[in-house]
Image (cartoon, rainbow, N blue to C red):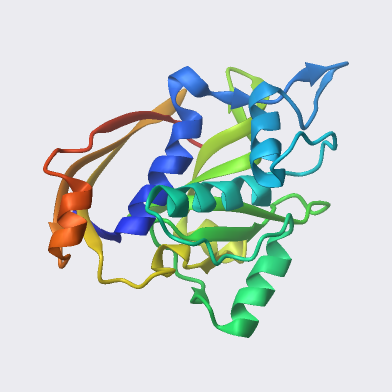
Length: 232
């Protein structure tokens, strides 16, 4: 059982919606390579810019930002995370103004930044959707997934050992705490790995330490999301 903030939970919902079997989001494959565009990738750009975008830029930070923004909007909250296409700017700004906690400890719903393993690559961004004793799990835009000898580019789920977290210098901006930690939920997570990915399930929601207004917002039902989740 994991204790997460209501905003963190909603951030996960927004992120997971991009990697369901019905909405797997991959880039177009043109002239022998993937390009940073496709109908669903263009939706990421258009959501961020508020209009049609013609540039095919890196979109990992753009994806993370629109996920967090969508979660805030769904709860009627203002998104105070700085808007930028660069993760470095966002992390530096947040650390400077102290608007959110930034450290090396992941949490469900936090905004992740890591150094790409390839020596010629820069930093990369994503959303943390699960943390356990062995691994952390993320959903990342502008990332790759290898299956049956083929490499696919797009929006995919990944998992990292705690050794990976250290080696890749991961940093976490605690967007899940944007409006505090009083509004929390107890959530059962089940991640079952298969060769071609894994099933990411969120079950058993129990409100903890919340007021009647939030109870009315949540309702009395059980949220159950069976989502496709690609294993790194």
